Length: 331
Image (spheres, rainbow, N blue to C red):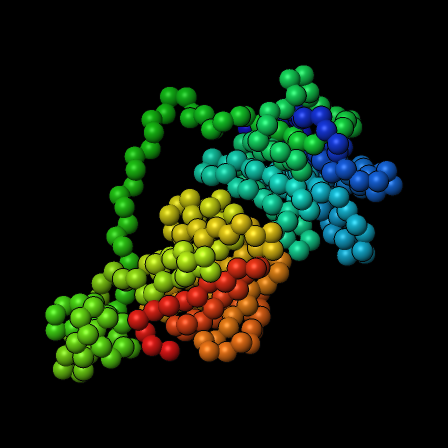
């Protein structure tokens, strides 16, 4: 399916409380709001449709409105481009975009202003400000014009079909597990080179009692959630309301720490391992990530996209939830 069909193929929709407007190369679904605001969004869509890149033109116009203090309803929009599809999500709206490699879920509540991206090779999408999971109306399709709606679907349903006459690709051999530098005690246990005693048997890691080595990294500690849940740190973790929907978690390169808290963003923070160190990074969250040193009551806000190395006993706060980093390494 190409972006040309995106310009021409009718959209399926579910009637509802919002408004769906369809122009050549641009579709906009807006949530319920007052008539004046709805009219303004529809005028913006009509003006943007005259641009060579209507989806991006609409995104720029919405950003200008938000910067000027205009209160806008939930919005989903997408437009055809030669290189793919321009998608936009704002407020309490959600869009699931399917590509040949994976599904991407875009949630407007995860962004301070809006989610605005260009995605290549889109085969289908669905968007809603209500329940996204239900089916479109049986006779509800729109080629152009304006109708009441609360969800839209475009493209082929289900998984993208395999090209005719092709064989499934052979699975690539699994990549070898990465190794890190460390030391072994006299009993052969692998350890962090910066500690003084073996974390397994307690033998002293003196100069004579240690042997340089490389091996797979063992657990370097544990994240303990405020409800007692524990997450051993053998790899990276994503913290948020919907970290399980990210490509990293689907691919198995990160573990999801899912928190049901409205003050927590979809992906709020990242816990990453760098050799033997554990670090936290705020992932562009709306409400921020905070750190507290052990034995203190003072919280420090972590700057967005800034990495901070954790020390044993430090507490990480996201929304109304807290996680403590514990380790055999002494503070």
